[in-house]
Length: 133
Image 1: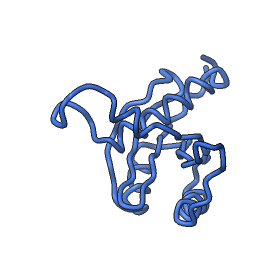
Image 2 (image 1 turned 90 degrees about the vertical axis):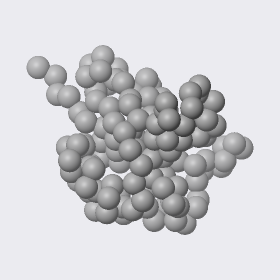
Image 3 (image 1 turned 180 degrees about the vertical axis):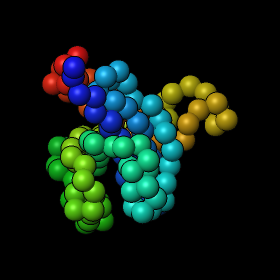
Image 4 (image 1 turned 60 degrees about the horizontal axis):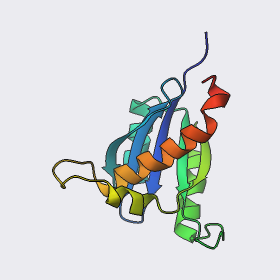
């Protein structure tokens, strides 16, 4: 029987952290919630029994890798303060793609959650074969 992994996709921002959930069985990402702090995020990680975190990397359109000191600090804290595997994944245009989805504010999840779901779904589409799908 294959192992099923619980994943969280994260769209990090200095004010808000968008979260999406997914698993290696369905290979589908769903917007989940938005939190404000790493402490809140760690609570979600525990509640959702997360094993793999997919953190969006705010790379430049030119391809220059993310070097925002606050983002790098967040990445380092995720790696040192959780027991999860932390994967960094290109998030370019995920927020714009989330904004482009149809619906009113009352009909859809928040921008940060949708961006997190787009990041996680892109990751799953590229990596689901390694989970047996």
